[in-house]
Length: 101
Image (tube, rainbow, N blue to C red; front, side, top):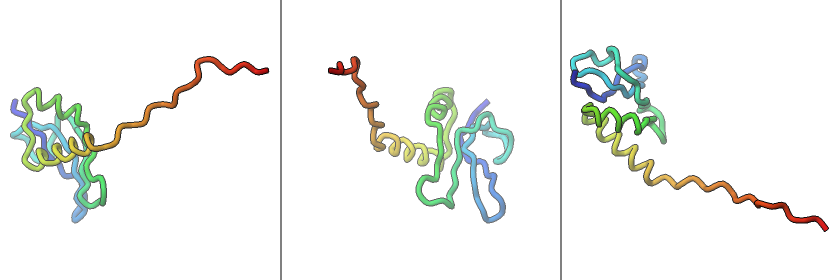
């Protein structure tokens, strides 16, 4: 069972919207998928790709091959995650309240 990570179209006519899926190589483009990993909306400005990178890594480790388009999208998503600023740490709280005089 050879697996591929590829796009599956779900949008209406002239309104493309895609799911990023893991599917068997021999199945149809919009056929049954093993797992949905995210979405891609080419018509939006800004963040077009929503992708679960942990699941992408899992499936690649199991032998799934991304299509050429998905390979470039995965690289862009990894760069976006690594260049994003780290979340701020929670403010430190005092361990003991100050004594009232």
